[in-house]
Length: 591
Image (cartoon, rainbow, N blue to C red):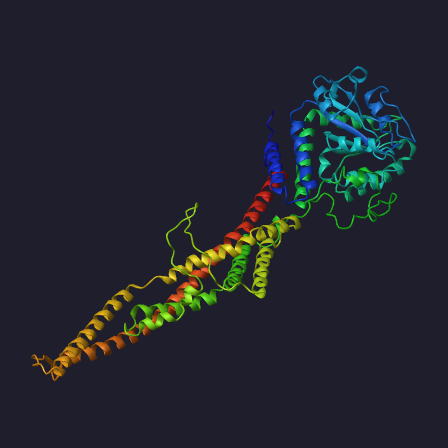
């Protein structure tokens, strides 16, 4: 295989690979017909470059009665094709070859059954390497003829359209072939045949009008020749043009380049190339408003289609930039996080964390005489089944946590989540073509069913940190028990003294702290100290509960935001990255 590189831009090989990559990226997102058409063009281009590059395949195409078969015979120097005026006489393509050695595989690929050597009649000369095809009529009443024309028009290296003074403005030709081939101006030639029937002034008017129509089709600058196959007028100019194209040996690469560019444009628009489409191949008339009128009359461009010769619009050239999209996604992500937090019951959990912290602080640091009464009150965190992790892990290494008992989201909260997901999808899809916008929206919703379990899991995991006991609780608890021991010692001491006095036993010496006996100091001091420590601990627990609630709220919002990012935003961003690769591949394919 010969690797050819143009003077500027990527090679045909790179463009072909890029078109295949773009088609693969578009599969499942763009219409199947558009993807299949792009792959067909890529396959056709790959097959052509593997065949003879020393031969240039030129097709004579035209309507019934245009005289293309007569022109074919005149160029070949002998009668090879039957000639008819009012009915189609060419049922299958046939080839005339000038120095046709090595062209067999190429003609086999083209499926041209009838082959003739023209070298004997005219000599190879400057036309050596020319393969001239006479195609069936593109407006034939037989569907098989029209399908044959459509197939070969998409395969040959150079297209020579043969028209006559009566039908050169035919809408079937301009709308079905010339306008869709606007990007193929480098491999298109127009021949106005039968000029011997017109006076010279009329010939010039027809040529000028034909050029005007071609400009409307996007084929500005295409060679337009006046020829008469009957008298031989203009044949030398046509032979010279063909000889130049054959000598350049570049028509095949120009054709493939135009095919790749056109295929990339239509793939970007999500539509197959119009040539060979079902309704046109079936012979249905062009849409209203697209018919070219008689010479000198106006021509209309079909409504809703892009201008001839111009590529369909692609969102890569419009819409917000990456930074703007990232900023909008960030804003939509915050909205999604807020909706998920509300649906997950974060406010309820945060309130339970603050209350639960105070409740457990009282149990841990309260006055031992009364703290046991606190156990009869329900634990707010335990009611929500928010418990510390137990150290078990699943097969993925994640810590196993149970489901919480947070109240289920209300209908309004679920609707807010749906709205937030839709907002993310709309922001991500903003500025994209319809099929890609739909793919981004679908990607944003693709894992929405996993949100409930994932959010509940991170709520259970993150909230579990709120159940950890501060270290100062243990110290205060120890202090409370020491104070309670002092109180108990004072009470026992006073009880012993009371018993001895009751039994009229001699009293032992009684130590005092100033005027107050130590047993009284221990009893009263222990009680007062226990109550004071409990009150101070409760005050500290209230402040600590607020801090822990704020930290828990922040941690929950962060964790839930990560879930929303992973299950909603990341799939949309992955689809945007795919679209970016798709547009980059299309740019390379366009050359």
